Picture 1 (cartoon, rainbow, N blue to C red):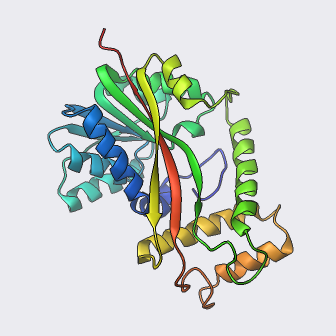
Picture 2 (cartoon, rainbow, N blue to C red):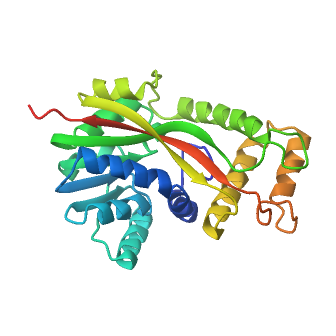
Length: 283
């Protein structure tokens, strides 16, 4: 995301959201393989907080007989989802609905997917309760939250102080905490996601972590996503990083520098994403 504030312009972030969806495709594919085992023949699927529809279109491809609906609060992003579906030749419906207030009219589904959306809501347990309420009896909710921060550079990139990633992680974690505290209706909660899904009334709860492992050399789209990620981290961390780290980032983001992210051959992407699964009881 472009900046960890509480007033996101999601439409303005469309390009980055699409790049992120493509770059993170390996973990999504693994998670969907798990869903194929948990829900072999879903009739209706909701992707809540779908953005430009990268995951929703993959769901439509994996489950071609299901009614797959991309749900998002930004009509501009839903329009991109429709264009993607047409380009890929998959069947996808769209519904404009704010999360979590606008979910009540969506009807029920056998599978609900929500990727990295719940943490943008002040009351995370309340949001999970609403997501669980969308499930038909026996239906499965899959929520992506947590994991491990991304790595894209060697520990020592050849200039500046080594281990830049760890200092960026600390800066981003601090900003994320402030973002959560500033959200309207923010509720402090122990982020035991499995426990939160059980509190939402779900059973057969478990969590699995999947890797995105894209080794060097990176394809053009993933390289562009890494650049945008570092640009975002640079903006968010500007006030807390020292001058040496700021200079290192400037050099990494210089398109003319052979050691910058646009040209260096050792750039990679390694990140872990955790998906939490729970089932609505049939009784």
